[in-house]
Each structure stands twice: as structure tokens, then as C-alpha cells.
Image 1 (cartoon, rainbow over the protein chains, first blue to last red):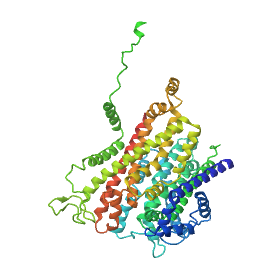
Image 2 (tube, rainbow over the protein chains, first blue to last red):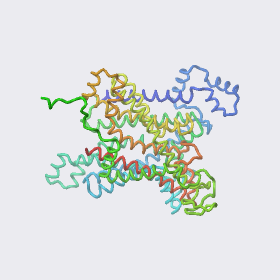
Image 3 (cartoon, rainbow over the protein chains, first blue to last red):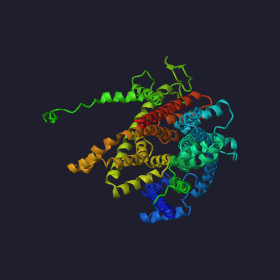
Image 4 (spheres, helix red, strand yellow):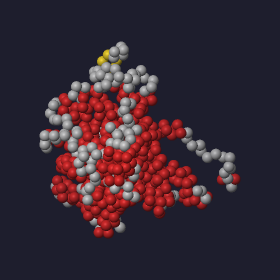
Length: 310
Length: 298
């Protein structure tokens, strides 16, 4: 177990290192271009040269790379070109907002999809199973921004119930959270529901469930005590891996509703060419993705002792 | 004795022609109503895309009367069947030309991703050892990026254009294709016909490309269909984020981005592209579901 964890940890660090190297070479290998970005398109070559030498850009490539990595490890990603504040300040603020959105999303999505999945998987082929399965396929096949368009059309433009943007300019408001969370839940619950359903359906065909039913236990007790425990192993990993999936979804939803979160920051930076912000955001995103993979691997082995990676 | 001898000039039973086999697959499709619906939706958009230059449509970029309602009369005596957008461009024309654009780029991008992914997968699976380690490590790096974020980095570095979208989709999809192909090849390479080819002294490249890849096609076709759907979503999403195919040519994602803020007084400008996009993606998902159902059965 510890060997496995250590191995995965090393692989994770290696991937992070390679990703950081790719990012650095993509955005900062050409130092003249960096100076051009920082000083603006109308800066002269002399100005750029001065800026480069002042900021230590004339060192060899690998020295610069190690300096950049050192800074990144301490949370120092430089200053944003667009907002003129340290990237770390900007990022912690935005990550907090995204964290709130993701937390509310998980608090609603997990109970909902697990319940639906268990209800559908309890009796394969029943009408409840069919309705839930078809519905989850339909909602998952429609991209977030299309769902968001229809929801905005109905709740904002037609019925005037909810605000159309969630920029939270007047402080935190639950009303502005409803639409972004609803879009994310509608898009994402189908996958976890289907996984739970498949896992539950498999458990229901097993010998010990048959034994429990045959010895006359009430159906409710069979489900709650015997089936659920084993059926929820597979969804656990799926839910943790959702984090990776969620990051992409968050980007779209945050842009759609102008929610001042991490994804909005990233797209904004990409459109502006704010290289330091892009680098920091991508490092955070890849870290979350790789780390959730790590957690899900470890969690899976802990929950299911029959699985042993060597 | 003599009747068991086979002469060289006696041809083996002739293989069915490609056309015949295609119709056989279609007949199989009929067994899955879900897949059939998906296929019909996709065919509808494909036909629209092909017919786009021949239909009596307005130029998709021509600026006429803005915010016309559905079925309004055009200044030149024609009709705006689906109204016009905020710049006064015909929405019907933009949706149909947009279908052509998204289908062409999605197919091309998926194809390129497949070529790269299959090469990586067959190399990793057949050679094994170091080649496998290296290719798998590279794939793992790209798989650790969330899809949209990888696309955003690539577009931010290369600038927005159709070719950038192709590169982005290739980087994001090829590692996944590589994993599937690698798994298939690991199974296939223990077959006798591979040993036969090795004994004949065929080169590794011949074995990989001629013996292995064609025999791995079954599951790949299902995956390709699903992936084509993902690519359509990816292109539309990038368009919506303002990072996709550059304006003014019609792109469904971009149409949505421009229409949503104005939805309060011109709802049709945002519902119509949204519905078009939803139907096409649903079509791909249903078709892939149907294909999977059929391939699992036999």
C-alpha cells in the first residue's frame, strides 16, 4: 500500500515537472516575445532589452527555468499583465470562488446521482430504470453552454425569476448561484448515475443478495445493509475523477455566467495573452487533475481490499 | 485423392463487395432504434452541409436587416425563414453553413487525431518495452490536462484558427486513442497470423500497419463515432469561449456567444443555434450508443 502510494506520488511529481517545463518553454522560451507582452506592442527594442536585463531574463534557459519553478513553489508566479496585481493574489481569490461553486455542486450532485443510480439499478429494466437512464443520457449529451442557454432563456428572459449573470458584484448571493450550479448538475449527474446504476445492478445479481432475499429479510434491509455498501465502491472513484471533468465544465459555466472564478480567469487570460496568469492557472488545474487521480487510485484500493496493485 | 487437391486457379469464395457490406451494416443498425434515430439526425445535418452551396440561401455573412422575427419579409422580397441576428445576417443560412463548417473541421480533426493516436498505440503495443514506456508516459502527460484547458493553452500559444483547433483536438484525443489501440494490439499480437507474418520475415512496420491495425478496427469505429461527437462539442465550446474558428464565418458556438446577451428581446437568435448544436451532438451520442449495443451483442 505504502509502496503503491509512493510510486504514484513519484509519477505525479514527474508529470507536474514535465508539465511545468512544457509550459515554461511554450510561454517563456522566446524572451523577446515575453518582453513585448509585458511592455506592450509599442515598446521599442531597447526598452525590451533593458526590461529583460533588469528582470534576469538574460540568464541561461535552465537557470531561468529553475528560478521560475522555485518561485512557483513559493506561490510567486509574477504579476498579472492585465490586472497589474500579483498572480497569486488574483488566483487565491478566484480559486475561493470556484471552490464555493464546486462545493455547492458536489453537495447537490452526489446525493442526487447516487439516489437515482441506486433506484435505477435496484431493478434492471423497470420503468423507473428506463426513465432515469434515458434522462441521464439526454442531459449528459447536451453541452453545458447549450443547457445554460435554455435555462437562461426560461428563468431569466421569460419568467424573470433569476439574474442572468453571476458576477457577485454586490457580495455573495445565493440567487446568483442557482443557475450555474443547476447547469453543472444537469450536465454531470448523468455519468455518476449511470456508473452507480451499473454497479448496483451488478451487486443485485450476486449470490449474497439472493441469500439475503431468500432468507426472508425485508427488501429495504437488503438494499440498505447488503447492497449499498458494495455498490458504492465504483461510484466513489468516479466522483473523485469528476474533479478533472468538472474543471472543464467550470470553465464554460463560469464564462457563461461571468462568475468570477478560476475558469473565467483562465479564459480571460488566454484571450488577453496574460502569460503569467495562464501558467499559474494551468499548473493549478493539472495539479488538481493529477491529485484527484492519485486520491481515486488510493481510495479504490482502500475501499476494495481485493484489489492490490503491485 | 484427386478430388481433395485444390488447384491454384480455383478462386476462394468471393468476398462481398464493399457496397453490399455497407448495406448489411445498415440493416444491423435497424435493430437498434436508438442508433437509427441518431443516424437519421446526423444524416440530416450532413445532407444540409453538402447542399449548403446549392440551396437558395442568403450569403451567411451578408448584413441585411437586424433582429428580424421568424418568417419576416426580407427587403429584397425574399423571406427570412428563421429571422436574422443582431447584425442582420440570415440565421437559417448561418446555421446550415455552420453545420458544414463544424462537420468538416470535426471530421478532419478527428481523422488527424486518429492517425497520430493509432501510430502511437500500435507502436507502444507491438514493440513494448522502452517504446511502450516512452509513448505511454507522453500520453499520460497530455491526459493529465483537462480537455478544455489543454485546448485553451494551445489556442493561446498558436492563436485562434481552424488549424489550431485540429492541433488542439489531436493533442487531447490522440493519447486516449493510443490507449485503446495499445490494448487491442496487446491482445492481437499473440495471434497466429502475426507469428506467420513474423516468420515470413515481414518488417515490423508491415505487421503493424497491414496485419494489426485493420484487425483492430471494430471497437475503433464505435470509438471514432463517439469521438466525432466530442470533437463537435469541443469546437463549439471553443467557439463559445471565443477561442475557436475566427469570425465572421458562421460557427454555432460563436453564434450562441453573441446571441445570449441579447436573448431578452431576440430569443430566437439564441434558441435556434442552441437547438441545432444540441440535436447534432445528441445524434452522435445516440448513434454511438446504438453501435455499442450492436457490437456487444455479437
